[in-house]
Image (cartoon, rainbow over all chains, first blue to last red):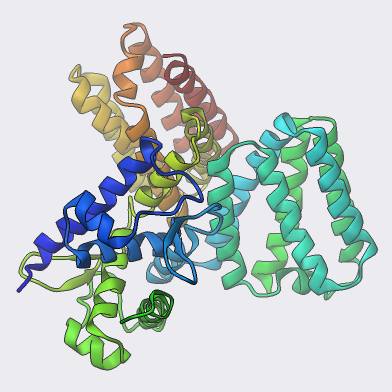
Length: 231
Length: 231
């Protein structure tokens, strides 16, 4: 019979070894992991421990198993931290306001960073998304575009960790506050306000004006958050 | 023989069900999970799937297995997101500067939030830590106290998610930049500068001055980050 504590150590060692393969560059994004039986030999662990470690890495969102077999290091880690964050949030009996507060904390400074680092290609993409939102009255589509806009701005910050954490936090917003954009647009005059916010945001990014980008994002999120918390 | 994809779904379902028990309040922090054989009956899954799900939840840091057996929902989730974040960071070939940048983003606004929400008890605790640092020349101890100080300030923000994410980011700083405080203190005059920063920070919190707290924290982290990136 396995002692659970000893078992824990084995699967932790397996994860540690896979992590070493990553840090040393032997495993890169998109790479296929060696088959289970090879890992058993390489890492000198039982097949059960290997499978436990692999499942855990899947949950964390670092690897994915593909149809037809095989485990792959994921190409993209967006959303990887969402599941654990979401469970923790539930356990903590936290208030949805805390998520909005955290999003504001990160996104305001991210806008400033984006204003500093954004390139022409990213500016064009962002302008394209804003134009699409302005022309469309399909709120399903606009909600999707709105999310993409915030994501593109985070990406333009040039800081991968910011993108990962902001994406996790945004997923948390989505899961606890359904249809945020629709809620705001129950008042028709808000459409014009959102359009103006987006234009101001774009202009601040275009001018590489850090302070202004942060200020506009703060104003935007204060406006949005007020709607979402007073519902 | 199990098809891996089908198997994935089963353990995901198990996690989803455990999550439901958490959201519904059936499972709370510190609670003992039902024994594996009971989970097998309750969740109608194979013992192997249950064990995989439990291991994954351990990795995420949501449950812990204790000596003598049994799995418990953890009382504290600090550090829970560190392991996944650390592996992602390695995979992404990110620069240590990105961690420092992210920490600054979060911690500056967190200081402002703490200035707003801090209570007398927390102020006394923070004053106590600062006094200890000022009196001690044991840099091992001071590094520990310094970390505690930042942690207490995050806690005083009253936002649990901020604490969780900041703790994950700080662990990342520690793992990629060893002995940060020692590095700074290779120049003896920096001791006085750090003491002054801490005093200013405490005064801003005491006065519940959000803007000042953010400003002082920004100045402090700019100073620290410059040392850590120029090494």
